[in-house]
Image 1 (spheres, rainbow, N blue to C red):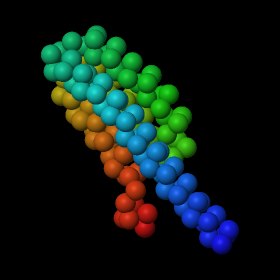
Image 2 (image 1 turned 135 degrees about the horizontal axis):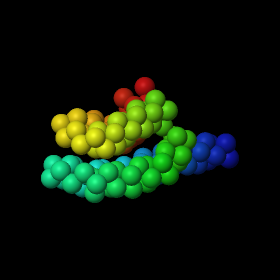
Image 3 (image 1 turned 90 degrees about the vertical axis):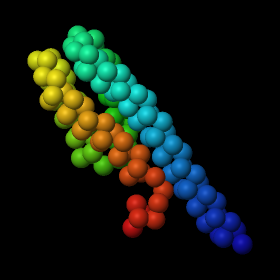
Length: 126
């Protein structure tokens, strides 16, 4: 009876921690996405200095998340996000509006896909 109780407790802890991690990833990526939406408005209105500053602030926030996310996520996903940030900041630095918007769209897509890939679904387990 004790071993059955221990196994059930282990599963509850495993599923609970998985749900907690998925929730934290979802909320933190949502915060970064909100900042990137502000960057999009700044780029659209060609406020390059403000956009560059906002990107740097968002990137600083991202670097803090990167360390935590690297425990749970595939590193290639994190590397792709990192590369996209670098491209975006360079496009904004040189005031390339169309390239900036395209890279911002790519970065937004990557950040939206992270929580989707980490939710507890059967196809994510198999």
